[in-house]
Image (cartoon, rainbow, N blue to C red; front, side, top):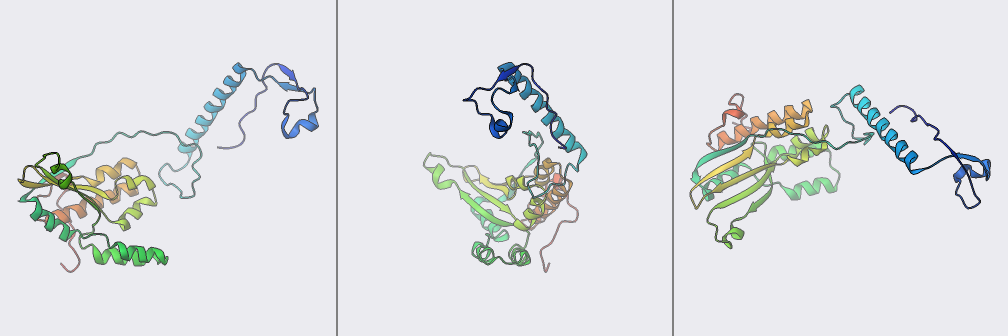
Length: 259
């Protein structure tokens, strides 16, 4: 926002008394100086006008500057509440296996985050390239497991016979490539995954389409990386011998190193 807001004199005057706080300029003005009135109606009118001018300036700033490239310096000006409506396609894929069998296969393809190695790199302030190399060596299909929640022991207490394991699956190297444009992508990175079954039957693999989540930020670079994650997810599904949903596409699916 450019310049100072226009200052408008208010109607009426009042005479400062000896107990009134005149602020830093009180001594120069002296008691008995004429000041603008500060009635309730005037204050409300002034506040409404100021808010209107701030809102107008914020809209002008957003329209004048690049709307998608955001700085990490925190110089955002006026920030308003934003609500975004978007469509997410949830994909549920039959595995043809019971849950323990498919879970073992999935966790073999998507290893756990090597947290001790990550902490060591962080503790000594290692170059980012070392983190990139670590993830590249550890995640053959581009994904790691950051968290696992096996709910079965808890729900058995309630008499439920269905089973489910939830995961946070992702890649913090890929996350950072989006984070630099839009920090709030961490809502969806890592991805949320569930493997579940009903009454010891066939297991299902459920996940939201990554690009649906990340395109909601209206940032082209983030949306492109979301489509990259679609492709990596398709490669993982193929490795697990699962059907690849049409919404992911089938072309140019990645292969792990050495294949």
